[in-house]
Image 1 (cartoon, protein in one colour):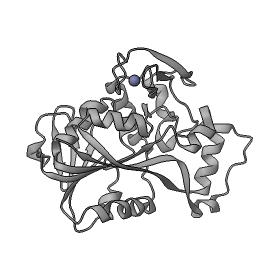
Image 2 (cartoon, protein in one colour):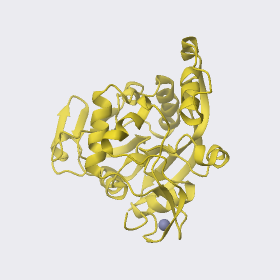
Image 3 (tube, helix red, strand yellow):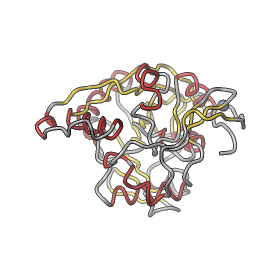
Image 4 (cartoon, helix red, strand yellow):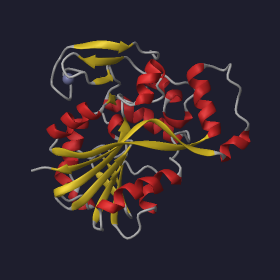
Length: 290
Ligand SMILES: [Zn+2]
C-alpha cells in the first residue's frame, strides 16, 4: 500500500495487529460464510484523514485465487431473501423504473426482487481475466477490462447501480468506482451497503467487531466514504444504518468463531429463527456528479 485511497497520505499507524499470518492457501478456510474462525489482516489508520484499512493485503491475483477456491468448495453462500426485499424497499421509492446494474450480483437475489426493471448483474470471474462473458442477464469478467460495451455495459447507459457489500472487497476501489461512474447516466444514482467503522457496534466491539475480516480491505465511515466517493465523481445524498437478517444458529456460530468454543454449539432448530441485527452496516445513496 503506497498511499491512502482517501487522501493520498503515505503515513499510517497500526490499529490492530493481524491475527492471521498465513498465505493465500491458508486463507481459504477463513473466507466468507464457510469460515472456521474470525480473523483479519493488519489494520492501520491513515495519520491524516483517519481512514482505516488492511495493510499489507494479498495481491489481486491472490484474492482471485482465494475466492475461486472458496466458491469451488461451496463456501460463500448468499444473503437471505429478506435482505434483498429490505434493500428493494429502500431503492424503489427513488427509482420509478429504468435500467440498472447489480455490481457484485452474487446469487442473483436482488434481481429476483426487482421485477419491472431492465437489469444486468455483474460478477467477477477469475477465469475470465482479460474479457467479459455474458449469459442471459449476467455479465462476468473484470469490470476494468476492455469489451464491456459488447456485453451491454455501455457508458452512460444506467439509471442506477447497486453494489451490496462489495466496496470493502475491491482490490482497486478507486478505479472500479470510477468505472461505475462512467457507466451511469449523468445524475445517475449509486446505492451501496458496506461496514461502517464509526457505527455504535463497531465502536463498542473494538477489535472484536465482526466486520473485521480477512476479506475486508477497507473500513469506511460516513466521513471517509464521502471524501472517497467525491474523488470518484459522486456526491453522497444520504447515509443511514441498515440491519442484516440472520438466523440465530449463525449468530451463535459467529460468536463461537470470535470468542471461542466455550460457547455451546447451537441446536439446529435455531436456524429457523431469523432476526435483523445491527451489525454495523450502512446504506448509502449517492449520485453521479459531472
Ligand atoms: Zn488518508
